[in-house]
Length: 360
Image (cartoon, rainbow, N blue to C red; front, side):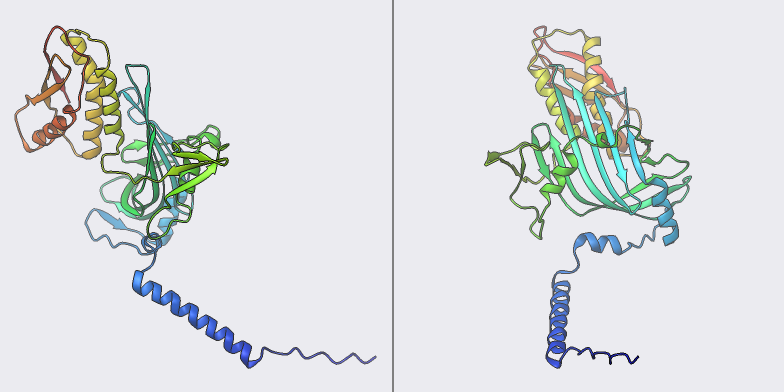
């Protein structure tokens, strides 16, 4: 039996081929023009362009080691640094994926004398790329980190940004438990849906939808049935509108809690606490916040013990004077203490001024 002759499939004509070629050339021209005038987007430039660290503190490693480090710390992690030693409870939660994407929410919570609670959240996502070992440390990897998007929730106020912020993390990868900046993280064993506060991740994703060169849109809308941490500025037609206010330089957990604490104590009834009780109040509240701030500013740097004389006026304001002999280190710590003390407030004193010592 003879088979039918196969049909010839007609190729694209010269006009179609020319049109396709023209389209490709136009696209290539548009892309090259954008890159030459504006460069690659910052996030991707940072991800794929490895910074060259020439300093003596790091021993670079290859791509295989990079992937191995990320795999070793990938997972869900939780830490509560300084638990029981401060007026502020810190809860640090991290999701680190094996492709280097990081989600992190750090929550600072303080119980105020008034019975209220001050809460500060820092929510962000980032990209992590290990680049070498820290010399002189046992299994500590230095990682290039780019914070992509971030938001801060300070009580009723929410702010956003800045974006594409570069930093370096030194991550301990010894054993099965990672460490970051001297803080040990444990595997998160609870319900994975409770790893982060409700609405934290979604808030960030919604806020940066459609983000362009000029930053986030003026506002974003979500349905009323969804949990959101941010406070709305308007509500209509079944949707809620949120303002995307940029974060200022003074939006920080220590500052926020110190001011909330000062407002609570200043509003308290007059109390003539004796010197010991007044000193204990200062040590467990303002003193713990001051220690936290100093630790964050001089992380890993040995610092001397510094003693201060604290004078509390009848109206509740305070003044601090260093007693420890002045050196460069003590003068620096004294400057931070004076900065804090300008906002310290104590309950008014009908018995007049009081003084005590505070040791940091």
